[in-house]
Length: 359
Image (cartoon, rainbow, N blue to C red; front, side, top):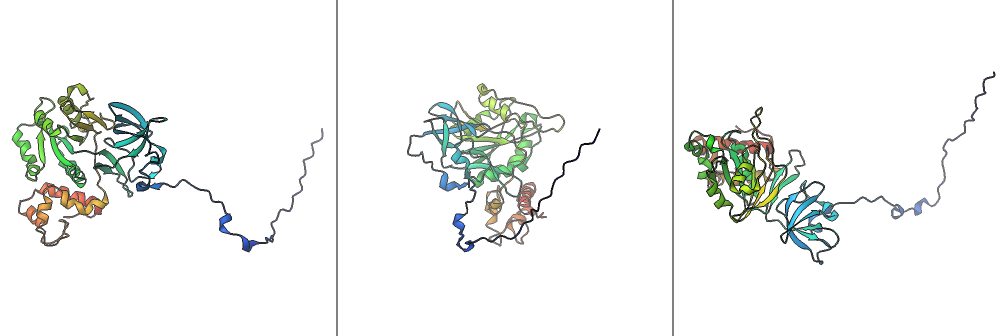
């Protein structure tokens, strides 16, 4: 049997030669059609919706879900509302567009949708640790922040407390320190000694026990008729204490890890609850660290506990209280008039901005 002949192909000459294009001088840029991409608008130019002339409902964000959906309370009704596409295309300086506590305006003509975010009184923000430092809104429009820590299990940690005090004061929010689990201490005097520095600098301290109810009345007096956010490490007993203040909430609680000795998350997202005795509370997931923005570096010396009063006595007006000579704060530390541990905490915050380790 004969083999089939293979097909023979003739290679074609497809070499490219110069071509003469006439009228090249008449060619203008306007004839080029560029592919347009959707540019993000500046935030201040897009806050006002074109629907502002329509009747928009006012409400407050009480919980945030995924996919840009929020739970908004308006006129004693709670509505699930997505964020409008227009707001998504604005140049926000934060990762999240809205925060729990935001006052918003809703269009209900077709579907419930957030069209405007009202001007904020203040925000509590933490920042990412990368070079872009995007903000992550914790809460908005609040009166005070309850900075929670525990005496034991997990151990008392004032480093995060100092950072949260600075973050609050930078946006005119009143910080209050709440030390929980005082039932684990051998004596209250021992805890009072640890917290004395903050009392002397004018920061309110509340000693509490979610186990036996101590400090509950004092904390209620602070919370009454205020909008308050609770923040702190996981495991310090936020949910347990809140359940003591208002048992009907029945927030989920959890013990600390036996392996790490640290708390485990029980609150997964921020929510607003109303107190029966007046006011509102924002419960937040526990946080491990809090990064401040690089732009606030020069402001820390004015908001760190007890430092602004001493800074006026420094030789140099722009003294950072880190390395300068004749610094009133450094002299106070050396003379035992300012707590050494809190000064070290201040230096750690300053190191996080500059990368320079001060001694």
